[in-house]
Length: 94
Length: 270
Image (cartoon, rainbow over all chains, first blue to last red; front, side, top):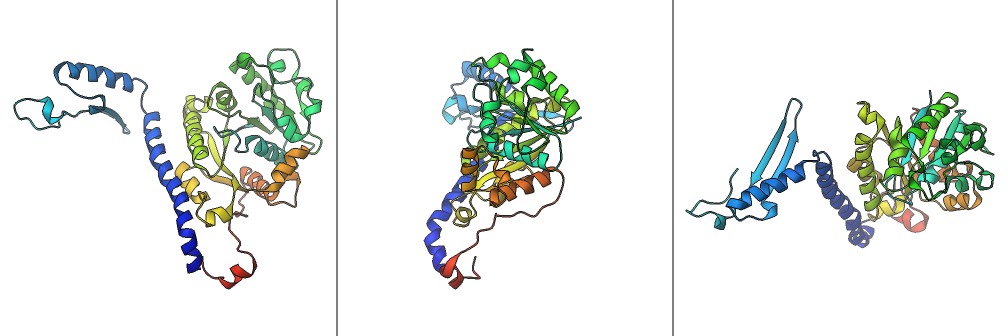
């Protein structure tokens, strides 16, 4: 069987690849699905407000809602690039 | 009260109508009064798979719009006594189906039948959502292939959000039906295994239908493949029907059987 395995090793990768790709994309799509519909708009609004003060890119504002049994946590994460702040403040901030 | 089961998939061409015809026939052969509704407005196909295309006079939209009674529109299957079907309309007007109309038809059928199978159109639009709206259970027809699995996942999302059951806080019982399965290609690592698909979608498995030439032959003839008892696909559909009825059946036709001298020489390895 070892000999056969050698021949098939090349092909064996493709089903594994399918599985891994699916897991990643479905995890992403499921997280989008469980979000309330206003979240993308909230993210856009926040981005515009922050932009008035600091120059940042659209992917640097992240908005995420984590649902728990008793409550939900709205996590807003704004990442400042080092160059965006004067006075030597290092990047990253909530 | 009938049990309403939607046969759905998201992706087209994975075997929804083929499966609906065989599951419906199987339920009827087991003595359950069963009716199948073709929801694919504009594209009528269930009638062809059942071989009753020349007996279609009225359709679902005619009934909803009051142009025909249910009794006039229902077609009785030639092979299974307890099986009826309600054909799709070929109108191009996609809005011809209304939620209220569908509700009325299902309520009326519910009085006379044990099972109502809703054969969903492909896609995730209105037609597919109407087909699933009143469902108590869902058969998710999926090929072991990336786009089919992804689309089934989208459909599961809709089942959880856009159905009457979801709105009333009930849970639709989901069944995974894997079709066009090739144990040989799975063995060779070229195809997602049933374990892979089941793990990714996290839906209980109701059946695995092996890739089979008999399926095309059956649709050519207009005889649901479940009637061709000699073929694996028929046996697999019979097993699936039994599981739908709550019986336990071991999986069949899912293991690759090595054949010939070559395989015998290498016997024992896996």
